[in-house]
Image 1 (cartoon, each protein chain N blue to C red):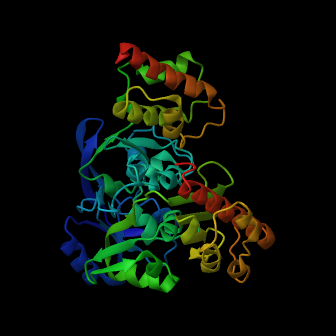
Image 2 (cartoon, each protein chain N blue to C red):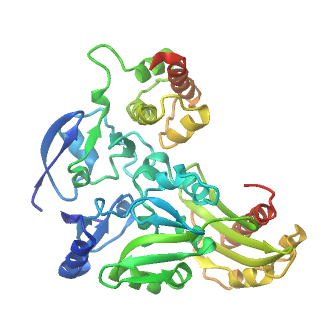
Image 3 (cartoon, rainbow over the protein chains, first blue to last red):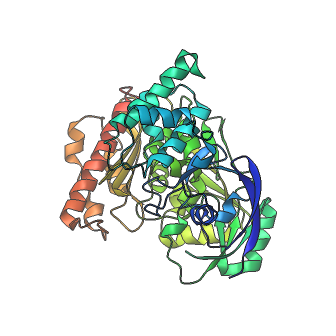
Length: 159
Length: 282
């Protein structure tokens, strides 16, 4: 099987990659150093490989790499500047919503896609948005509180 | 399923000629989330059809026209008075999958746990195909047998789906049992009921997940038509056709439990659809 060239916008920068036809986006990202996108169930159930594709959260384990040709992909590496965390990351830390942290990048990106579309979601809307992100440590309560905190801050003019 | 090559297509005519040219190895793909679950002995050439202009939902008189490449998320978010597919979309898989999966893909690749075929069998309506064999086919006809479904989907490109808008006197319900949240369905049932002058004038009941292919329970439908929509009716349904069907129980379910579960789901769906048709809920 030979590689083919594809190009897409990755974290705001135009990039070109050689991909195998059967390669998944998750594998392409990780072999190019974007390791914030985690290997999990590899069948779309756990959400730890979540990335944002054209503004929507998707499982990179289910998307073939060639499918993102000409599109825009955002990974967790694009959030925060240096030591300064993104507001979603900050809320997760301050509310104690991170334990082992393996699911956290996926949750951050699911929340980010939601806030980009709707800056002030209700708790029910948050639950729907993160229904594809499994967390074995926290029991979800603190994650919901943290994301709701961001929503409330937007409601009070934070964004 | 393994992909040995990929091609991007942006016109229906282009897809049709690619399908002719590539033959059996051609594999139309938009969301692609089902490819993980497709067992294929040979590698495929994926024809990426994401760019085809087959997206969106519009109301045309008493029907909704849904482009084949409309995502499940778009079905979930769409709001209109007679729109009921949001209820089905909301409980399909998880948000990440709903964001990329399309209604066309859900209908083209029928797994026994598939959601949309069951919902659309109950709702009625039709599918418009173009490409090699252009035609308008009733949903019931497409899903009458696995080979009818295969024939129509291998020869043509699904253009759009047409379903009726729910109006006064109509009720629809979709019920699904899963072991865990977002998991594949263990038992699925959907019902559409129309009530005129106090009696059920139209009924469609479909089930899936416990069978290799979704089916309509026509004996149950015949039993319901002409009856008054009362609770006691649910206790009088016999499910004779179901008793003779070859079951496909999932995850260590016994046949007995499988039948029990699907009967409950079907009755729940009929009950909710009757309530809605009577104006009880929406």
